[in-house]
Image (cartoon, rainbow, N blue to C red; front, side, top):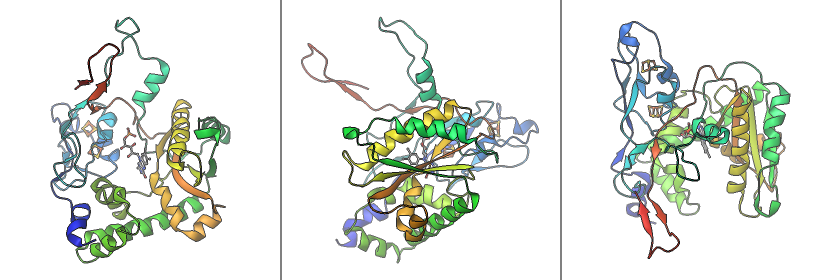
Length: 338
Ligand SMILES: Cc1cc2nc3c(=O)[nH]c(=O)nc-3n(C[C@H](O)[C@H](O)[C@H](O)COP(=O)(O)O)c2cc1C
Ligand code: SF4
Ligand code: SF4
């Protein structure tokens, strides 16, 4: 494929990273506090701190609008200026650009105002928790998380997963460094106008557009490359979810459902969790894969880290509300709810 055709994938234009702001009237820093929860809870270190001032977002911040800074702020001082979006081209966000909305108020079967139940609360309040204490998680609790994964639904009841639990910090560091090596090489090649053409040349043989989505190549991989933090987030526990790559329905969806069961149960036990999809890079590190006991047909699909939170990182955030198409009984055609 000529470079002209690949350019929109490797050099997307009109990418607008998210913009957030902190209200100086609500933030406690202008009144002398040293609070920095928003800074700590941003995976991309998008904020700048100056003594005596509310945090400001860096001009070149790679914000992908996760809104984790909002949940960490005890003063609810942070608000959305503009969500991440791409106007045109390969990575165009559609429909562009959606306002972020909070969860709708619950209603009961008769349409009356209702309360969320325990499961809804767990779903809506769950956030990725990346700031964890240096405190071990008892194996009895890890076991409960694994059991939640074992009892997940799977296509054909094939149960195509296996779990590798790593609490050995030396091995976690080895995984961090191995993954860092590959991600930083990829990121540096991408940033270089000459080298990026080598990536583009290899793309045709194995197209993986998600790898070059600006949120990943600039945000996620950029953050790892800058050593903002280790891939496995200094967690005391890493659970790798490996799947049989031949499995019914495909390994991605089975691993995803299994992991979400585990994540919600982990959060219910006083521990908290975060997904680490970059764990997949282990599949490209043969020595590490072998050490972890993974050979064909097993592939690392994703990972979860567990630990105790250093501060509150959960809560409600707004999310895009995509138009919903309803085909209602008795209606003449589809109705689109904006
Ligand atoms: C499949 C998958 C892979 C992810 N991989 C990573 C990762 O490698 N590192 C990370 O810090 N967060 C990772 N995340 C967390 C997402 O960034 C996060 O879910 C998203 O920003 C929404 O924020 P929330 O989880 O707080 O709602 C991943 C999430 C999913 C579902
Ligand atoms: S929305 Fe997410 S990425 Fe953007 S500044 Fe806040 S924490 Fe960072
Ligand atoms: S978390 Fe809130 S109060 Fe604390 S520094 Fe950030 S904006 Fe200010």
